Length: 453
Ligand SMILES: *Cc1c(COP(=O)(O)O)cnc(C)c1O
Image 1 (cartoon, rainbow, N blue to C red):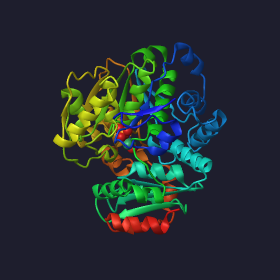
Image 2: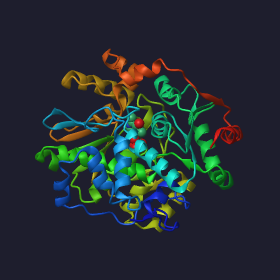
Image 3: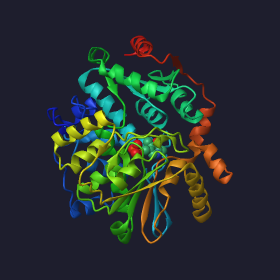
């Protein structure tokens, strides 16, 4: 299987090269040249597989340049770090309401599904090529800690995550800074998330520096992340009762559009998922898109669901490419227009598989309370967006993207309880190691030169 860029100006690459490259040199995102068509028979054969076995059966179609047995080992290792035997258990709240729990990984958020695997893929590539890499990223919380836990202690890799000092939640900071691993650098930037992001962009854009230090980016646009995320939709669908398989709408708390895109791509591969509902918080660019066909960022307003506080949904370009019937030229023109005008109006916008909702902070509190009262079940503030305006006459699978214990203050405000988790209790006692660095590209560059591999 080969991978092409949504902007069409990058030669097709194999899986490992596309994963290592991340963002295509033409500024586009990688996608499979053609999507496989899975059949009824495939689905029947997959119904009884364990999560890692299913992941292998799915990914072997895509990762064709990794030997089968090696791929199996990488996958087994990636999901061995999860604390629940089913990895992605499907909880029945009622006959027509299901919750897919995606928070049993090491950092208690769904990003572990992709980043545990990506970490093992990076380690494998370092070994194959006899090279070390330095992984660089900026985070406002969940991505950074999930990336760190994906690379923790892996030989041949070092990771540098920039975060705005004092602006992530204390638990998120501890997840990044209390690992005790010498290849992990939690860099506390004396500035905002945007400063951190701009520094990472500048350093990755400096090709000489990038080559010399074998820098690799960790962000939500890596192809491997989208493919790894397809698997839990497949697993959930296979475990639904037959009537729900036909009818269920998948409800996805959304920020960068990476999670829901994976489900939608799986549908394009022949898995009959009925439809999707994009659930945003008050940062509602995607809600507005699916209701008006206009893609227009607004200022980001911090909310109770911070991992969805995003106004530019980077994975949206992949959706656009398929919407344009794989016309890379048209996609490139739209993205350039977007860069120039700050918005795009999509002609003949067809999003028939999608509905969208948005939740204010008040809605988030109300939904946490409602689910607790009605089902005696505690959801986190991101998952709470998924419970907004559910149609009681329909069947839903709500994706639970984080464990409630990660957001004790909001949960406490909603229901007067403080959820906990053993892994979070353990890190509260550990020593914090952070590296405060001035918010300039120069300062971070010097830090990397001194501490990189
Ligand atoms: C990242 C994140 C989201 C948003 O996912 P996208 O793929 O960016 O749409 C939602 N909830 C939680 C808890 C997250 O960490």
